Image 1 (cartoon, rainbow, N blue to C red):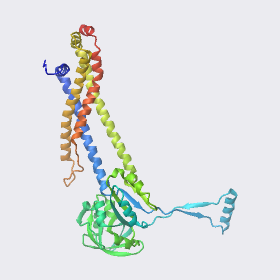
Image 2 (cartoon, rainbow, N blue to C red):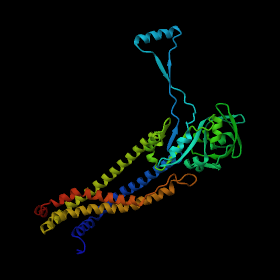
Image 3 (cartoon, helix red, strand yellow):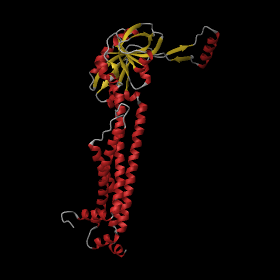
Image 4 (cartoon, one colour):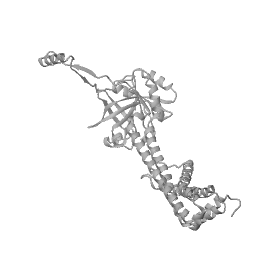
Length: 422
């Protein structure tokens, strides 16, 4: 026995070596569970990070728009007999019949949007405020007519808020008053390329001839066919909103605090404020369900590893009951026997986590080389930070220690005389 090592350590490692096959099997089981936890943690983190990047890079975190137009109360016309009869009946009932008709919402300019923009920019946490003018229009080219969603932008601010440059497949995202950005499907449908002319006509009948300065590919057929971008001044002219902006789009420093910041912005009068968290409420429900599912998988993997370690140690206690009885008879304390088996559980968890971390890293490396699109670009990045391996190692060691608690208590309670007699 090595005098430099504690008694519990020497005895625990000896028991593990004597049952080497059992030890290797349980380490392999723990390692497999740990590797799955490492791989799935990186997979979930990478997937959610990719989704959040898509959402945050291509939509504003907060949108300020004019309040909805109030509905109108419609009362019955009492000039005809039916209406008179209705009025009489209503009078008998003690009330006047009325119906509420929602008003159709039309593109309207945000009142004093420059002032609202300045006030919003002064708030802590607001990085960028970009005015936009949005409405419906038609694209005309020869005999072809296509309805589109028209968005007028201020390039110097909007392109710092929305990553349009990343979606350019030809041309440039910069816009002048005579330029237009269109989607790739719309470009194919109309047979145009950068530099070609298009006629844009608003619902009011106002039209303008614009040059295609760039073609975008959003990776979505609907957006590629239905969204076009022009300069803010051009959209104002087409939509009949001289000097106006239908909305202010905001980028914030802390996206997950957007709802709190939206509440502060909403203190300004005559505006409607919505955060990306509110408008994507269903997405967050799905994300919460995904996170909960992964948590349950981790719990079940941990329970499986714990039961495996506990079963091996219970068998070890039964197999080595005579040795334990002799040790107790020769002066070994209950605390030392307890420590021996707790240390075995900890070592099994730690060794399994180390092997599992290596396996998890190998799985991640294989995934990075395999999960790529046709252009050889990974679908999303899988990064396993060093602290993930540390947390997994600590968790596996703790699970191993806790799973050894019952077998250790059983071994410590053995009566020496009964254990020696077998």
